Amino acid sequence: MNCLTSQELDAYVDDRLSQADRQKWEQHLDHCPHCQQQLEAYIDCLAQANEPWSETISADLEQKVIRSLSPHPVSILSRTAGARASTPTRQKKRSLTVMKNVSIAAAALALVVSGGMLMSPTFSSYVNAAFASNPLNNEAPAASKTILGQFGDDGIRQAVQNGFTQFPQVQVTDQGITFAVQEVIADPFRIQLATSITDQAGKPLEVFWQDMYQQETKKPVVTLKDKHGNILQPADFAKAGGGAVNPNDEWKNHRNLAGQLFLERELKTYFTDVSKVPDELVVEFSVQQMGETKGNWKLSVPVNMQKAKAATKTEAIHKSYTTPQGIAFTLQEMTFAPTGVELVIDQRTNADKSSSYSYELVDDRGTVIAARDPQTFTGRVNKSKNDIRSMSGVPFQSIEGGFRSYHYFQPIAPQTKLSFKLGSVYTEEPTDFRVKIDLGQLAKQPVLAEDHEDRFTFKKFVKDPDRVVDVEGYDDGAYTVKPDGTTTKIEGHHIAFDITLGKKTAPLLTAPAYWTVTDETGKEYDTDYYVDKSELVNGQGHFAGTMLVKDSDPLPKEFIITSTKRIARHDDADWQVPIRPASK
Image 1 (cartoon, rainbow, N blue to C red):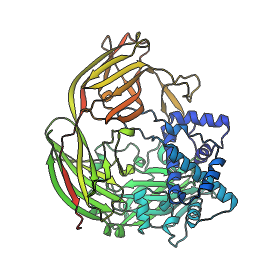
Image 2: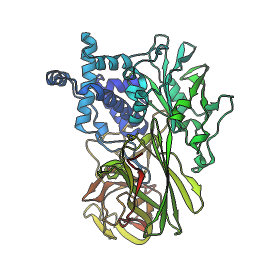
Image 3: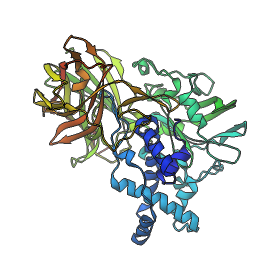
Image 4: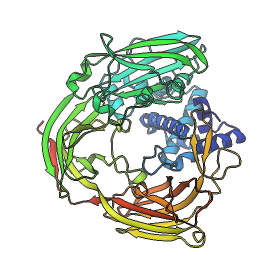
């Protein structure tokens, strides 16, 4: 089955699909992380667009709109997507309030457009921006009418409000397909572009996005250059993870329901020093195929960085602290730019073990303005606040004895008296965990185990009767999703688990990441872990999900799970550092 188009996702959210088509798409969404991400992005766009005007709707109109709504089949958003324990899930849980507001936004929009009742200027601006398929004219519109002003994150929207939007007004047409770039926001941290791809009738297409991320050829379709035409290469530290397999993966993307495509790229991976960012950049596009249509869509987008660079200020900190575990931290600096703030932290340790940490940025009243947990904390156990999720992948830089991290948050008001407060420190510690699971007895009685106050329960995997799968004849299980949207089942044996971690254990699903699974003969098995629940209960991590032991047919008599490492939690750090005194 192919992935859903934006029109099909729109119809799905608006409950305009037939019963058969809806079930088919829900089955596909159940096992396609790509489509789940796109659906989540669409819901985000509607929710963000709803924020500026939702409070202006009267109670009577709200009730009228709600009564007009059909049940929206968005159950896919209420379940945490299956994900390996070692990687954070990208699927977020949605509250009833958010979905209510999104539904009101969609239905009210339909009512207003059909009835011709553009009653409020704010709502009128939203309607005009959301349905604009042609490039904006050369006159800069009000921030409330710009595309990025409507659909960007908080940092992007604040930059729009402060006049940092650029309107390149460039487009190219070939084979009846028009590719246009309407708006750009850029500062020394990142660059974001609002683009569109339309057919001869002005109907939005998705083909550029598919060509960019799903084609087998890994040729770059977006290149960053300086004003002299020199191709800019990412800094060496950006290659710490081995580099991207697909060079276009570094350009993050999402779409809204009006068909606009948003592309974003971190500039920090090109310039480790803000002062090294050129005054002028050029984003060059070279697309040779749009879906099945071959052609030549080349476009150069000039980006002026001078105004954003002038508005970017850095506060030097250079304060250090060593935890009782021997981990040395140095707060180097904090930089304030139009779309957000960057905190640079050095971390060194003499111990031969990995470590991570959490912290808060608080004002003079103790109010948490921003917070950061390790990225491996997933779901509700992650207490990060106001971080820029799209920049969470900026890699670290190796330094002598450790590494330098770059953390990004939404803009903070200049007058805020700000302090850094170190939270928990997490270190890798030795352990001796071992549990035997008799597969013949597992259906009759769960297996219980403990390790350092961590409690584990293993039990027979029971298929969820409400869960459907994408491939006829397959039981509920694990799948890989190919670029064309089809699925392949991963063969193996499932065991359900429930884990409650002790107060001295990091509240993240680290235990399975260290597990080794063998049978009674010593044969080792490859495993995957799928998390259905992650939450904090009295400050302790609680997880539930399934363990897939691959290629375990025929089943052995027993599985033996062992582990020699765990992640310990330390709450004995005492370090608070002023970053920006009120006098500044």
